[in-house]
Length: 356
Length: 269
Image (cartoon, rainbow over all chains, first blue to last red):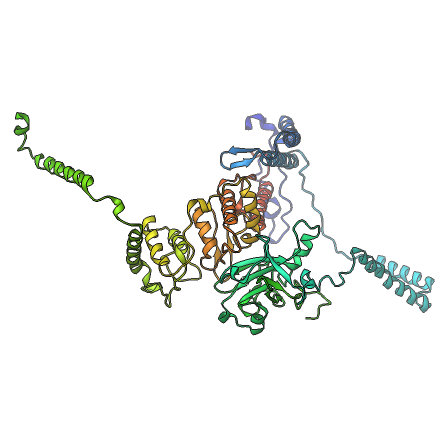
Protein backbone atom coordinates (compact mmCIF):
# COMPACT_ATOMS: atom_id res chain seq x y z
CA UNK A 1 0.00 0.00 0.00
CA UNK A 2 3.04 2.22 -0.23
CA UNK A 3 1.51 3.93 -3.24
CA UNK A 4 -0.88 5.64 -0.80
CA UNK A 5 1.95 7.70 0.57
CA UNK A 6 3.62 10.36 -1.46
CA UNK A 7 7.41 10.17 -1.50
CA UNK A 8 8.03 13.55 0.12
CA UNK A 9 5.87 12.59 3.12
CA UNK A 10 8.07 9.64 3.96
CA UNK A 11 10.67 10.12 6.65
CA UNK A 12 14.21 10.84 5.58
CA UNK A 13 16.41 7.89 4.94
CA UNK A 14 18.16 7.24 8.23
CA UNK A 15 21.07 5.28 6.94
CA UNK A 16 23.60 7.93 7.85
CA UNK A 17 21.95 9.15 11.03
CA UNK A 18 21.80 5.72 12.67
CA UNK A 19 24.00 5.74 15.73
CA UNK A 20 25.18 9.27 15.14
CA UNK A 21 25.43 9.65 18.89
CA UNK A 22 27.95 6.86 19.33
CA UNK A 23 29.90 6.73 16.14
CA UNK A 24 32.01 9.79 16.91
CA UNK A 25 32.78 8.92 20.52
CA UNK A 26 35.73 6.95 21.73
CA UNK A 27 33.89 5.99 24.89
CA UNK A 28 32.26 2.58 24.25
CA UNK A 29 29.80 3.11 27.15
CA UNK A 30 28.49 6.44 26.04
CA UNK A 31 24.76 7.01 26.27
CA UNK A 32 23.42 6.03 22.87
CA UNK A 33 20.41 8.29 23.36
CA UNK A 34 16.97 7.54 22.01
CA UNK A 35 16.58 5.88 18.65
CA UNK A 36 15.40 8.25 16.00
CA UNK A 37 11.65 8.66 16.07
CA UNK A 38 9.99 7.11 13.09
CA UNK A 39 6.51 8.32 12.32
CA UNK A 40 3.80 5.81 11.63
CA UNK A 41 1.89 5.78 8.42
CA UNK A 42 -1.10 7.19 10.25
CA UNK A 43 1.01 10.11 11.47
CA UNK A 44 1.95 11.22 8.03
CA UNK A 45 -0.98 10.13 5.95
CA UNK A 46 -4.34 11.58 6.83
CA UNK A 47 -6.15 8.94 4.76
CA UNK A 48 -4.47 6.12 6.72
CA UNK A 49 -5.41 7.86 9.96
CA UNK A 50 -9.02 8.12 8.84
CA UNK A 51 -8.99 4.46 7.86
CA UNK A 52 -7.58 3.42 11.25
CA UNK A 53 -10.23 5.53 12.94
CA UNK A 54 -12.93 3.73 10.97
CA UNK A 55 -11.39 0.34 11.81
CA UNK A 56 -11.38 1.09 15.53
CA UNK A 57 -14.96 2.31 15.41
CA UNK A 58 -15.96 -0.74 13.40
CA UNK A 59 -14.60 -3.02 16.08
CA UNK A 60 -16.47 -1.16 18.78
CA UNK A 61 -19.64 -1.38 16.69
CA UNK A 62 -19.12 -5.14 16.21
CA UNK A 63 -18.75 -5.40 19.97
CA UNK A 64 -22.04 -3.55 20.45
CA UNK A 65 -23.80 -5.82 17.97
CA UNK A 66 -22.35 -8.90 19.69
CA UNK A 67 -23.64 -7.68 23.03
CA UNK A 68 -27.07 -7.19 21.53
CA UNK A 69 -26.70 -10.68 20.04
CA UNK A 70 -25.85 -12.00 23.49
CA UNK A 71 -29.02 -10.56 24.96
CA UNK A 72 -31.02 -11.71 21.96
CA UNK A 73 -29.74 -15.28 22.10
CA UNK A 74 -30.48 -15.35 25.80
CA UNK A 75 -34.08 -14.62 24.90
CA UNK A 76 -34.31 -16.67 21.70
CA UNK A 77 -32.72 -20.01 22.53
CA UNK A 78 -34.43 -22.63 24.58
CA UNK A 79 -32.27 -23.75 27.47
CA UNK A 80 -32.37 -27.42 26.47
CA UNK A 81 -32.05 -27.02 22.70
CA UNK A 82 -29.21 -29.17 21.35
CA UNK A 83 -27.72 -28.53 17.92
CA UNK A 84 -24.95 -30.16 15.91
CA UNK A 85 -21.97 -27.92 15.18
CA UNK A 86 -19.22 -29.56 13.18
CA UNK A 87 -16.03 -29.88 15.18
CA UNK A 88 -17.75 -29.74 18.55
CA UNK A 89 -20.52 -32.30 18.11
CA UNK A 90 -23.87 -32.02 19.85
CA UNK A 91 -23.80 -28.85 21.92
CA UNK A 92 -26.31 -26.63 23.66
CA UNK A 93 -27.41 -23.88 21.28
CA UNK A 94 -27.80 -21.43 24.16
CA UNK A 95 -24.33 -22.04 25.60
CA UNK A 96 -22.74 -21.82 22.19
CA UNK A 97 -24.50 -18.58 21.26
CA UNK A 98 -23.84 -16.91 24.61
CA UNK A 99 -20.17 -17.90 24.61
CA UNK A 100 -19.62 -16.83 21.02
CA UNK A 101 -21.33 -13.44 21.30
CA UNK A 102 -19.80 -12.52 24.65
CA UNK A 103 -16.39 -13.61 23.39
CA UNK A 104 -16.72 -11.49 20.26
CA UNK A 105 -17.99 -8.51 22.27
CA UNK A 106 -15.06 -8.57 24.69
CA UNK A 107 -12.48 -9.38 22.04
CA UNK A 108 -13.55 -6.50 19.82
CA UNK A 109 -13.33 -3.99 22.67
CA UNK A 110 -9.81 -5.18 23.42
CA UNK A 111 -8.72 -5.36 19.81
CA UNK A 112 -10.23 -1.92 19.11
CA UNK A 113 -8.44 -0.39 22.08
CA UNK A 114 -5.12 -1.94 21.06
CA UNK A 115 -5.52 -0.83 17.46
CA UNK A 116 -6.41 2.68 18.58
CA UNK A 117 -3.38 2.89 20.86
CA UNK A 118 -1.04 1.55 18.21
CA UNK A 119 -2.17 3.63 15.27
CA UNK A 120 -3.73 6.86 16.49
CA UNK A 121 -2.62 7.74 20.00
CA UNK A 122 0.62 9.68 20.30
CA UNK A 123 3.64 7.41 20.14
CA UNK A 124 6.35 9.89 21.07
CA UNK A 125 8.99 8.41 23.32
CA UNK A 126 9.04 10.21 26.67
CA UNK A 127 12.15 9.66 28.78
CA UNK A 128 11.60 9.81 32.55
CA UNK A 129 14.82 10.37 34.45
CA UNK A 130 15.36 8.37 37.59
CA UNK A 131 15.93 10.49 40.68
CA UNK A 132 17.18 9.53 44.13
CA UNK A 133 14.21 8.78 46.38
CA UNK A 134 15.35 10.73 49.44
CA UNK A 135 14.62 14.42 49.75
CA UNK A 136 17.52 16.88 49.99
CA UNK A 137 19.06 17.75 53.34
CA UNK A 138 17.33 21.10 53.69
CA UNK A 139 13.83 19.63 53.38
CA UNK A 140 14.67 16.80 55.75
CA UNK A 141 16.03 19.11 58.41
CA UNK A 142 12.90 21.22 58.10
CA UNK A 143 10.56 18.25 58.54
CA UNK A 144 12.46 16.97 61.55
CA UNK A 145 12.36 20.41 63.10
CA UNK A 146 8.61 20.66 62.55
CA UNK A 147 8.10 17.24 64.12
CA UNK A 148 10.18 18.22 67.17
CA UNK A 149 8.27 21.45 67.60
CA UNK A 150 4.93 19.61 67.34
CA UNK A 151 6.00 17.00 69.87
CA UNK A 152 7.22 19.66 72.29
CA UNK A 153 4.04 21.71 71.95
CA UNK A 154 1.79 18.71 72.53
CA UNK A 155 3.72 17.82 75.64
CA UNK A 156 3.61 14.23 74.42
CA UNK A 157 7.03 13.35 75.87
CA UNK A 158 6.35 15.10 79.14
CA UNK A 159 2.83 14.03 79.95
CA UNK A 160 3.36 10.27 80.27
CA UNK A 161 -0.17 9.56 81.46
CA UNK A 162 -1.74 10.92 78.31
CA UNK A 163 0.75 9.03 76.19
CA UNK A 164 0.17 5.69 77.93
CA UNK A 165 -3.60 5.93 77.99
CA UNK A 166 -3.63 6.87 74.32
CA UNK A 167 -1.52 3.86 73.39
CA UNK A 168 -3.80 1.69 75.51
CA UNK A 169 -6.97 2.94 73.89
CA UNK A 170 -5.51 2.51 70.42
CA UNK A 171 -4.48 -1.06 71.24
CA UNK A 172 -7.91 -1.97 72.58
CA UNK A 173 -10.03 -0.54 69.76
CA UNK A 174 -9.38 -3.52 67.38
CA UNK A 175 -10.87 -5.82 70.02
CA UNK A 176 -14.32 -4.46 69.19
CA UNK A 177 -13.79 -5.98 65.72
CA UNK A 178 -13.04 -9.34 67.27
CA UNK A 179 -16.26 -9.11 69.29
CA UNK A 180 -18.16 -8.42 66.07
CA UNK A 181 -16.91 -11.80 64.77
CA UNK A 182 -19.17 -13.35 67.39
CA UNK A 183 -22.02 -12.31 65.10
CA UNK A 184 -20.87 -14.91 62.56
CA UNK A 185 -23.05 -17.45 64.25
CA UNK A 186 -23.93 -19.33 67.40
CA UNK A 187 -21.25 -21.43 69.05
CA UNK A 188 -21.38 -25.06 67.91
CA UNK A 189 -22.02 -26.21 71.50
CA UNK A 190 -22.09 -30.00 71.59
CA UNK A 191 -23.16 -30.47 67.98
CA UNK A 192 -19.71 -31.51 66.83
CA UNK A 193 -19.27 -34.09 69.57
CA UNK A 194 -22.33 -36.16 68.76
CA UNK A 195 -24.04 -37.60 65.72
CA UNK A 196 -27.51 -38.91 65.03
CA UNK A 197 -26.45 -42.26 66.47
CA UNK A 198 -26.39 -40.81 70.01
CA UNK A 199 -30.04 -41.70 70.65
CA UNK A 200 -29.14 -45.40 70.39
CA UNK A 201 -28.80 -47.30 73.67
CA UNK A 202 -28.28 -51.02 74.39
CA UNK A 203 -31.97 -51.16 75.40
CA UNK A 204 -33.22 -49.19 72.41
CA UNK A 205 -30.75 -49.82 69.57
CA UNK A 206 -30.95 -48.06 66.20
CA UNK A 207 -31.11 -50.10 63.01
CA UNK A 208 -28.62 -49.50 60.20
CA UNK A 209 -30.60 -48.57 57.09
CA UNK A 210 -29.17 -49.29 53.62
CA UNK A 211 -29.29 -45.96 51.75
CA UNK A 212 -29.98 -47.72 48.44
CA UNK A 213 -32.97 -49.78 49.48
CA UNK A 214 -34.11 -47.87 52.59
CA UNK A 215 -34.34 -51.24 54.33
CA UNK A 216 -32.56 -52.60 57.41
CA UNK A 217 -29.83 -55.16 56.75
CA UNK A 218 -29.00 -58.59 58.04
CA UNK A 219 -25.36 -59.64 58.45
CA UNK A 220 -25.65 -62.21 55.66
CA UNK A 221 -26.61 -59.42 53.22
CA UNK A 222 -23.16 -57.90 53.55
CA UNK A 223 -20.70 -60.20 51.80
CA UNK A 224 -16.91 -60.12 51.97
CA UNK A 225 -15.55 -57.60 49.50
CA UNK A 226 -18.75 -55.59 49.24
CA UNK A 227 -19.27 -51.93 50.11
CA UNK A 228 -22.55 -50.65 51.54
CA UNK A 229 -23.62 -47.22 52.77
CA UNK A 230 -25.91 -46.83 55.75
CA UNK A 231 -27.79 -44.19 57.72
CA UNK A 232 -29.53 -44.37 61.09
CA UNK A 233 -33.10 -45.59 61.36
CA UNK A 234 -35.56 -42.70 61.38
CA UNK A 235 -33.49 -40.31 59.28
CA UNK A 236 -35.55 -39.72 56.15
CA UNK A 237 -34.40 -37.92 53.04
CA UNK A 238 -37.52 -35.75 53.15
CA UNK A 239 -36.55 -34.40 56.58
CA UNK A 240 -35.74 -30.71 56.60
CA UNK A 241 -32.28 -31.15 58.10
CA UNK A 242 -31.42 -34.37 56.25
CA UNK A 243 -28.26 -32.98 54.64
CA UNK A 244 -27.02 -31.58 57.95
CA UNK A 245 -27.61 -34.90 59.70
CA UNK A 246 -26.26 -37.24 57.03
CA UNK A 247 -23.08 -35.16 56.92
CA UNK A 248 -22.27 -36.62 60.33
CA UNK A 249 -24.19 -39.89 60.43
CA UNK A 250 -23.07 -41.45 57.13
CA UNK A 251 -21.56 -44.91 57.48
CA UNK A 252 -19.68 -47.20 55.16
CA UNK A 253 -20.01 -50.88 55.83
CA UNK A 254 -17.34 -53.30 54.71
CA UNK A 255 -16.91 -56.95 55.52
CA UNK A 256 -13.39 -58.24 55.98
CA UNK A 257 -12.55 -61.89 56.61
CA UNK A 258 -12.02 -61.92 60.43
CA UNK A 259 -8.48 -63.31 60.03
CA UNK A 260 -7.49 -60.29 57.92
CA UNK A 261 -8.50 -57.76 60.58
CA UNK A 262 -5.30 -56.68 62.31
CA UNK A 263 -6.77 -54.54 65.09
CA UNK A 264 -8.50 -56.49 67.90
CA UNK A 265 -10.47 -53.53 69.24
CA UNK A 266 -11.75 -52.82 65.75
CA UNK A 267 -12.74 -56.47 65.27
CA UNK A 268 -14.69 -56.43 68.55
CA UNK A 269 -16.59 -53.30 67.52
CA UNK A 270 -17.69 -55.01 64.32
CA UNK A 271 -19.98 -57.96 63.88
CA UNK A 272 -18.50 -61.14 62.36
CA UNK A 273 -16.09 -59.06 60.29
CA UNK A 274 -18.61 -56.40 59.32
CA UNK A 275 -17.07 -53.04 60.21
CA UNK A 276 -19.00 -49.77 60.25
CA UNK A 277 -16.77 -46.73 59.75
CA UNK A 278 -17.68 -43.06 59.54
CA UNK A 279 -17.72 -41.97 55.90
CA UNK A 280 -16.39 -38.52 56.80
CA UNK A 281 -12.67 -37.89 56.35
CA UNK A 282 -10.91 -36.72 59.50
CA UNK A 283 -8.91 -34.14 57.57
CA UNK A 284 -11.44 -31.59 56.30
CA UNK A 285 -14.59 -33.69 56.20
CA UNK A 286 -14.93 -34.90 52.62
CA UNK A 287 -17.07 -38.00 52.12
CA UNK A 288 -14.58 -40.79 51.55
CA UNK A 289 -15.47 -44.16 50.15
CA UNK A 290 -12.90 -45.03 47.52
CA UNK A 291 -12.61 -48.49 49.00
CA UNK A 292 -10.19 -51.02 47.57
CA UNK A 293 -11.53 -54.41 48.51
CA UNK A 294 -8.26 -56.32 48.15
CA UNK A 295 -5.99 -53.99 50.12
CA UNK A 296 -8.80 -52.73 52.43
CA UNK A 297 -7.59 -49.18 51.89
CA UNK A 298 -10.05 -46.31 51.79
CA UNK A 299 -8.85 -43.22 49.96
CA UNK A 300 -10.10 -39.67 50.29
CA UNK A 301 -10.40 -38.02 46.87
CA UNK A 302 -9.76 -34.50 48.20
CA UNK A 303 -6.25 -34.75 49.63
CA UNK A 304 -5.38 -38.42 49.26
CA UNK A 305 -5.58 -39.38 52.93
CA UNK A 306 -5.50 -43.17 52.99
CA UNK A 307 -6.94 -45.30 55.79
CA UNK A 308 -6.36 -49.00 56.36
CA UNK A 309 -9.81 -50.32 57.25
CA UNK A 310 -8.34 -53.70 58.21
CA UNK A 311 -6.22 -51.98 60.86
CA UNK A 312 -8.72 -49.81 62.69
CA UNK A 313 -8.78 -47.25 59.83
CA UNK A 314 -5.24 -46.16 60.75
CA UNK A 315 -3.96 -43.29 58.57
CA UNK A 316 -1.27 -44.75 56.30
CA UNK A 317 -0.86 -41.75 54.02
CA UNK A 318 -1.95 -38.17 53.71
CA UNK A 319 -2.82 -35.23 55.90
CA UNK A 320 -5.61 -36.75 58.02
CA UNK A 321 -4.86 -36.41 61.70
CA UNK A 322 -6.48 -39.46 63.22
CA UNK A 323 -8.23 -42.71 62.24
CA UNK A 324 -11.82 -42.83 61.02
CA UNK A 325 -14.18 -43.28 63.96
CA UNK A 326 -15.77 -46.73 64.07
CA UNK A 327 -19.34 -47.38 65.18
CA UNK A 328 -19.91 -50.39 67.40
CA UNK A 329 -22.51 -52.65 65.80
CA UNK A 330 -24.32 -55.84 66.71
CA UNK A 331 -27.65 -57.47 65.83
CA UNK A 332 -31.09 -57.17 67.41
CA UNK A 333 -33.59 -59.96 68.14
CA UNK A 334 -34.82 -60.06 64.54
CA UNK A 335 -31.23 -60.39 63.31
CA UNK A 336 -30.91 -56.91 61.83
CA UNK A 337 -27.69 -54.93 62.17
CA UNK A 338 -28.00 -52.26 64.87
CA UNK A 339 -25.90 -49.72 66.72
CA UNK A 340 -26.14 -49.47 70.49
CA UNK A 341 -24.59 -46.05 70.93
CA UNK A 342 -22.79 -43.14 69.33
CA UNK A 343 -19.24 -43.07 67.99
CA UNK A 344 -16.62 -43.02 70.77
CA UNK A 345 -15.15 -39.81 69.37
CA UNK A 346 -16.38 -36.92 67.22
CA UNK A 347 -16.56 -37.69 63.51
CA UNK A 348 -14.91 -35.52 60.88
CA UNK A 349 -12.09 -33.01 61.18
CA UNK A 350 -10.45 -31.99 64.43
CA UNK A 351 -11.51 -28.82 66.20
CA UNK A 352 -9.99 -26.78 69.01
CA UNK A 353 -11.99 -28.06 71.92
CA UNK A 354 -11.49 -31.66 70.91
CA UNK A 355 -9.81 -33.91 73.46
CA UNK A 356 -7.98 -36.18 71.01
CA UNK B 1 -26.53 -87.59 -23.29
CA UNK B 2 -24.10 -87.07 -26.04
CA UNK B 3 -23.20 -83.72 -24.64
CA UNK B 4 -22.57 -85.19 -21.21
CA UNK B 5 -20.46 -88.06 -22.42
CA UNK B 6 -18.54 -85.74 -24.67
CA UNK B 7 -17.41 -83.74 -21.65
CA UNK B 8 -16.64 -86.62 -19.30
CA UNK B 9 -12.93 -86.33 -19.97
CA UNK B 10 -12.97 -82.62 -19.18
CA UNK B 11 -10.33 -81.74 -16.53
CA UNK B 12 -13.04 -80.41 -14.18
CA UNK B 13 -15.29 -83.45 -14.51
CA UNK B 14 -13.79 -85.12 -11.45
CA UNK B 15 -14.41 -82.02 -9.37
CA UNK B 16 -18.06 -81.83 -10.44
CA UNK B 17 -18.59 -85.49 -9.57
CA UNK B 18 -16.93 -84.99 -6.21
CA UNK B 19 -19.13 -82.00 -5.36
CA UNK B 20 -22.25 -83.91 -6.37
CA UNK B 21 -21.26 -86.83 -4.21
CA UNK B 22 -20.56 -84.61 -1.22
CA UNK B 23 -23.86 -82.78 -1.56
CA UNK B 24 -25.74 -86.06 -1.80
CA UNK B 25 -24.03 -87.50 1.25
CA UNK B 26 -24.62 -84.33 3.27
CA UNK B 27 -28.28 -84.18 2.22
CA UNK B 28 -28.86 -87.80 3.08
CA UNK B 29 -27.17 -87.33 6.44
CA UNK B 30 -29.27 -84.30 7.23
CA UNK B 31 -32.39 -86.24 6.33
CA UNK B 32 -31.65 -89.42 8.20
CA UNK B 33 -29.32 -88.39 11.04
CA UNK B 34 -30.63 -88.74 14.61
CA UNK B 35 -32.53 -85.61 15.72
CA UNK B 36 -30.83 -82.90 17.83
CA UNK B 37 -33.09 -83.51 20.80
CA UNK B 38 -31.43 -86.81 21.46
CA UNK B 39 -28.75 -84.74 23.20
CA UNK B 40 -29.99 -83.77 26.65
CA UNK B 41 -29.30 -80.31 28.09
CA UNK B 42 -27.13 -81.74 30.81
CA UNK B 43 -24.79 -83.36 28.37
CA UNK B 44 -24.48 -80.07 26.43
CA UNK B 45 -23.55 -78.48 29.73
CA UNK B 46 -21.02 -81.19 30.55
CA UNK B 47 -19.64 -80.87 27.04
CA UNK B 48 -19.18 -77.14 27.62
CA UNK B 49 -17.50 -77.83 30.95
CA UNK B 50 -15.19 -80.32 29.24
CA UNK B 51 -14.30 -77.83 26.52
CA UNK B 52 -13.92 -75.10 29.11
CA UNK B 53 -11.55 -77.24 31.11
CA UNK B 54 -9.32 -77.66 28.06
CA UNK B 55 -9.34 -73.91 27.39
CA UNK B 56 -8.66 -73.29 31.07
CA UNK B 57 -5.68 -75.63 31.10
CA UNK B 58 -4.25 -73.79 28.13
CA UNK B 59 -4.91 -70.16 29.04
CA UNK B 60 -5.51 -69.86 32.77
CA UNK B 61 -3.98 -72.76 34.70
CA UNK B 62 -0.44 -71.38 34.84
CA UNK B 63 -1.63 -68.77 37.37
CA UNK B 64 -4.92 -70.10 38.75
CA UNK B 65 -3.84 -73.77 39.10
CA UNK B 66 -4.93 -76.76 37.02
CA UNK B 67 -8.28 -76.97 38.77
CA UNK B 68 -8.75 -73.30 39.51
CA UNK B 69 -7.55 -73.77 43.06
CA UNK B 70 -5.30 -70.72 42.87
CA UNK B 71 -1.56 -70.33 43.30
CA UNK B 72 1.12 -67.82 44.07
CA UNK B 73 0.30 -65.87 40.90
CA UNK B 74 -3.49 -65.92 40.89
CA UNK B 75 -6.39 -66.26 43.30
CA UNK B 76 -8.60 -69.32 43.68
CA UNK B 77 -11.55 -69.30 41.31
CA UNK B 78 -13.76 -71.52 43.42
CA UNK B 79 -17.05 -69.69 43.91
CA UNK B 80 -16.34 -66.66 41.69
CA UNK B 81 -19.10 -67.80 39.35
CA UNK B 82 -19.61 -67.50 35.61
CA UNK B 83 -20.29 -63.74 35.76
CA UNK B 84 -16.73 -63.06 36.91
CA UNK B 85 -15.29 -65.13 34.04
CA UNK B 86 -17.55 -63.44 31.51
CA UNK B 87 -16.41 -60.03 32.77
CA UNK B 88 -12.68 -60.71 33.13
CA UNK B 89 -12.24 -62.62 29.86
CA UNK B 90 -14.88 -60.64 27.96
CA UNK B 91 -13.13 -57.33 28.65
CA UNK B 92 -9.72 -58.84 27.86
CA UNK B 93 -8.44 -58.36 31.42
CA UNK B 94 -7.82 -62.10 31.65
CA UNK B 95 -5.53 -63.71 30.68
CA UNK B 96 -3.41 -61.00 32.31
CA UNK B 97 -0.76 -59.33 30.20
CA UNK B 98 1.68 -58.89 33.08
CA UNK B 99 1.57 -58.70 36.87
CA UNK B 100 1.14 -55.24 38.38
CA UNK B 101 -1.02 -53.01 40.52
CA UNK B 102 -3.95 -53.47 38.18
CA UNK B 103 -4.70 -55.62 35.13
CA UNK B 104 -5.88 -53.31 32.32
CA UNK B 105 -8.66 -54.05 29.84
CA UNK B 106 -7.34 -55.02 26.44
CA UNK B 107 -8.48 -56.68 23.21
CA UNK B 108 -10.38 -59.87 23.94
CA UNK B 109 -9.01 -62.87 22.04
CA UNK B 110 -11.71 -65.41 22.95
CA UNK B 111 -15.00 -65.91 21.11
CA UNK B 112 -18.20 -65.59 23.16
CA UNK B 113 -18.69 -69.37 22.79
CA UNK B 114 -15.26 -70.02 24.28
CA UNK B 115 -15.91 -67.57 27.11
CA UNK B 116 -19.16 -69.37 27.87
CA UNK B 117 -17.31 -72.69 27.98
CA UNK B 118 -14.66 -71.28 30.32
CA UNK B 119 -17.39 -69.76 32.47
CA UNK B 120 -19.21 -73.11 32.58
CA UNK B 121 -16.05 -74.80 33.82
CA UNK B 122 -15.33 -72.16 36.50
CA UNK B 123 -18.99 -72.18 37.60
CA UNK B 124 -18.74 -75.94 38.05
CA UNK B 125 -16.01 -75.41 40.69
CA UNK B 126 -18.40 -73.79 43.14
CA UNK B 127 -21.59 -71.72 43.14
CA UNK B 128 -21.22 -68.01 42.41
CA UNK B 129 -22.84 -65.10 40.54
CA UNK B 130 -24.26 -66.27 37.20
CA UNK B 131 -23.74 -64.43 33.91
CA UNK B 132 -26.79 -62.14 33.63
CA UNK B 133 -29.36 -62.48 30.87
CA UNK B 134 -30.09 -59.47 28.67
CA UNK B 135 -33.33 -58.58 30.44
CA UNK B 136 -31.44 -58.42 33.75
CA UNK B 137 -29.39 -55.41 32.66
CA UNK B 138 -31.82 -53.68 30.33
CA UNK B 139 -33.96 -51.21 32.23
CA UNK B 140 -37.50 -50.64 31.01
CA UNK B 141 -38.89 -48.05 33.40
CA UNK B 142 -39.04 -44.50 32.06
CA UNK B 143 -37.20 -42.81 34.91
CA UNK B 144 -34.42 -45.39 35.15
CA UNK B 145 -31.76 -42.89 34.09
CA UNK B 146 -32.76 -40.40 36.78
CA UNK B 147 -32.94 -43.03 39.52
CA UNK B 148 -29.72 -44.60 38.30
CA UNK B 149 -28.02 -41.21 38.46
CA UNK B 150 -28.87 -40.88 42.12
CA UNK B 151 -27.63 -44.40 42.87
CA UNK B 152 -24.50 -43.80 40.81
CA UNK B 153 -23.64 -40.68 42.78
CA UNK B 154 -24.12 -42.53 46.06
CA UNK B 155 -22.28 -45.72 45.22
CA UNK B 156 -20.00 -45.29 42.22
CA UNK B 157 -19.13 -41.64 41.59
CA UNK B 158 -16.50 -41.46 44.33
CA UNK B 159 -14.16 -43.65 42.26
CA UNK B 160 -15.50 -43.54 38.70
CA UNK B 161 -16.21 -39.73 38.66
CA UNK B 162 -19.69 -38.23 38.39
CA UNK B 163 -19.65 -38.59 34.60
CA UNK B 164 -18.21 -42.11 34.64
CA UNK B 165 -14.82 -40.98 33.37
CA UNK B 166 -12.83 -42.92 35.97
CA UNK B 167 -10.16 -41.72 38.36
CA UNK B 168 -6.96 -42.51 40.23
CA UNK B 169 -6.67 -44.73 43.29
CA UNK B 170 -3.67 -45.57 45.46
CA UNK B 171 -0.33 -46.96 44.32
CA UNK B 172 -0.94 -47.18 40.59
CA UNK B 173 -4.46 -48.55 40.82
CA UNK B 174 -7.25 -46.70 39.11
CA UNK B 175 -10.98 -46.80 38.49
CA UNK B 176 -11.33 -47.19 34.71
CA UNK B 177 -13.50 -44.98 32.54
CA UNK B 178 -16.94 -46.42 31.87
CA UNK B 179 -17.12 -44.96 28.40
CA UNK B 180 -18.05 -47.55 25.81
CA UNK B 181 -18.26 -50.38 28.33
CA UNK B 182 -20.83 -53.04 27.50
CA UNK B 183 -24.02 -52.92 29.61
CA UNK B 184 -23.49 -56.58 30.50
CA UNK B 185 -19.96 -55.94 31.72
CA UNK B 186 -21.05 -52.99 33.90
CA UNK B 187 -23.68 -55.23 35.48
CA UNK B 188 -21.19 -58.06 36.04
CA UNK B 189 -18.63 -55.72 37.60
CA UNK B 190 -21.18 -54.56 40.17
CA UNK B 191 -22.13 -58.16 40.84
CA UNK B 192 -18.65 -59.61 41.21
CA UNK B 193 -16.38 -56.74 42.30
CA UNK B 194 -13.44 -57.28 39.94
CA UNK B 195 -9.93 -56.56 41.20
CA UNK B 196 -10.10 -53.77 43.80
CA UNK B 197 -13.67 -52.72 43.11
CA UNK B 198 -16.00 -53.62 45.97
CA UNK B 199 -18.94 -55.78 45.01
CA UNK B 200 -22.58 -54.71 45.26
CA UNK B 201 -24.49 -57.95 45.80
CA UNK B 202 -28.23 -58.21 45.15
CA UNK B 203 -28.82 -58.24 48.91
CA UNK B 204 -27.60 -54.66 49.32
CA UNK B 205 -28.27 -53.42 45.79
CA UNK B 206 -31.20 -55.22 44.17
CA UNK B 207 -31.20 -56.19 40.50
CA UNK B 208 -33.63 -53.37 39.67
CA UNK B 209 -31.19 -50.75 40.97
CA UNK B 210 -28.27 -52.27 39.07
CA UNK B 211 -30.37 -51.99 35.91
CA UNK B 212 -30.98 -48.31 36.63
CA UNK B 213 -27.29 -47.65 37.19
CA UNK B 214 -26.44 -49.37 33.90
CA UNK B 215 -29.05 -47.22 32.16
CA UNK B 216 -27.55 -44.05 33.66
CA UNK B 217 -23.96 -44.97 32.79
CA UNK B 218 -24.85 -45.86 29.21
CA UNK B 219 -26.81 -42.63 28.87
CA UNK B 220 -24.14 -40.40 30.39
CA UNK B 221 -21.11 -41.85 28.67
CA UNK B 222 -22.61 -42.60 25.27
CA UNK B 223 -25.87 -40.86 24.50
CA UNK B 224 -25.79 -37.54 26.28
CA UNK B 225 -24.99 -34.45 24.18
CA UNK B 226 -22.25 -32.17 25.33
CA UNK B 227 -23.77 -28.76 26.11
CA UNK B 228 -20.53 -26.81 26.41
CA UNK B 229 -18.74 -28.05 23.31
CA UNK B 230 -15.57 -29.19 25.08
CA UNK B 231 -15.89 -31.78 27.86
CA UNK B 232 -12.17 -31.73 28.70
CA UNK B 233 -12.64 -35.29 29.91
CA UNK B 234 -15.52 -34.36 32.26
CA UNK B 235 -12.95 -34.55 35.03
CA UNK B 236 -13.98 -31.33 36.75
CA UNK B 237 -11.96 -28.33 37.92
CA UNK B 238 -8.50 -29.84 37.43
CA UNK B 239 -8.65 -30.17 33.67
CA UNK B 240 -10.65 -26.99 33.31
CA UNK B 241 -8.12 -25.05 35.37
CA UNK B 242 -5.23 -26.52 33.44
CA UNK B 243 -6.92 -25.63 30.17
CA UNK B 244 -7.55 -22.09 31.36
CA UNK B 245 -3.99 -21.58 32.55
CA UNK B 246 -2.22 -23.08 29.58
CA UNK B 247 -4.45 -22.21 26.64
CA UNK B 248 -6.25 -19.15 27.99
CA UNK B 249 -3.32 -17.40 29.62
CA UNK B 250 -0.90 -18.70 27.00
CA UNK B 251 -2.98 -17.12 24.28
CA UNK B 252 -3.17 -13.82 26.18
CA UNK B 253 0.61 -13.79 26.67
CA UNK B 254 1.15 -14.55 22.99
CA UNK B 255 -1.16 -11.68 22.02
CA UNK B 256 0.58 -9.31 24.44
CA UNK B 257 3.97 -10.20 22.96
CA UNK B 258 2.63 -9.74 19.45
CA UNK B 259 1.15 -6.36 20.32
CA UNK B 260 4.38 -5.18 21.90
CA UNK B 261 6.73 -6.57 19.26
CA UNK B 262 5.00 -5.23 16.19
CA UNK B 263 5.10 -1.54 15.51
CA UNK B 264 3.24 0.15 12.76
CA UNK B 265 6.13 2.37 11.75
CA UNK B 266 6.00 3.42 8.17
CA UNK B 267 9.19 2.13 6.64
CA UNK B 268 10.52 2.87 3.24
CA UNK B 269 11.11 -0.44 1.63
